[in-house]
Length: 332
Image 1: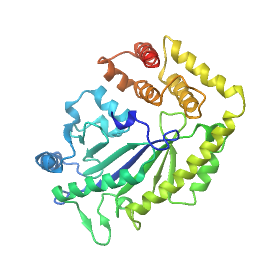
Image 2: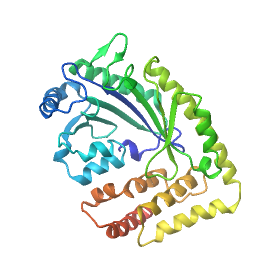
Image 3: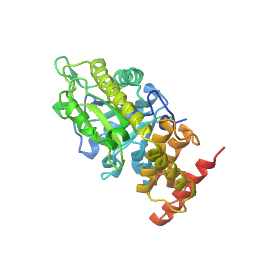
C-alpha cells in the first residue's frame, strides 16, 4: 500500500514526513537552462539508474498524460510548477510505493525526496541519507569541505536538507490559537505556513541548512512538532468535551457525504476534515482511518479522474466525487 494511504505515528495530527536533499552532479553547470545540457544530464542518470537501485523508474513527464502529472502534484510528490513541464524536459525517478520521488533538473540537478506517513523523522531521514549516499556513489555530487553540498542558491548549501512535516490543526484554528504557534516559532529558524488548497493543514520546516548536521536539523523539527501536536490534542479534548455541538457537526458532515448526489472539491475538503477530526478524537466510529485516507485522496480531481480512467467536466466530476465517496463509506 502506498505511504499516503497509511496511518503512521501521531497521524491523528501529523499527516506526513518529507525529507528533501537539493543536489548537483559534478561535471554539469548549475541551474541548467540549455536543452543539450539537460539532455546530457538525463542521459547520465538513465544510464546509471540500475546502479542506484531502490526500484526506481525513470519517467519523462512529457510521456505521461496531464491527469497523471497532476495526480502526482495532489499527492505532494512534485510541485505544480514542475508538472507544467513548459520546456518538455522535466523528468522524475520514482518507485512503485511512491515514497521516493526525485525531481530532475529543477533549480538544482536533483531534488531527492523521501516520504512517510505520520511523524517519522528519524527513520525517514536515515533512509533518505542511505539513498542519497548511493546516488552520490554512482553519479558524484558537487561538494566542498567548507560549504558542504553546493547548490544553485547559497541558502540551500551545507546539508542541502529540507525537513518538513504536514500537520492538520483544526483545534488550533477553531480556538484561534494558531497565532500563538506562529509567534513561538518566530524565535527559531523554522518556517510554518498553511498548505494551499486545504482548510487546516500546515507545513513546518527548517530554514537553515548550513552549520548544523542533518540529525540536528531533524531533531529540532521533531521537538517543535511534538510540542505542536501536544497542544493540538489538548485543544481537541476541550472541543470534544463541549457537548453535542461538535458531535452534531461531525455527523452532519458524515450524513452529507453518505447521501449527497453532487459534491464540490471545497465541500469535500471541509466535510472530510471534520470527519477525520471526529475519527481521531473517538466520536466517529463508523469509518476507519484507511477509508478516510482513501476518500481524501480520491476527492482530489486528478486522482479521481485517474482512478476512474476518464476525463470529466467540473459538474460531472462533482457527481463522480459524491458517488465514489459513498462507495468508500459503504465498503465492507
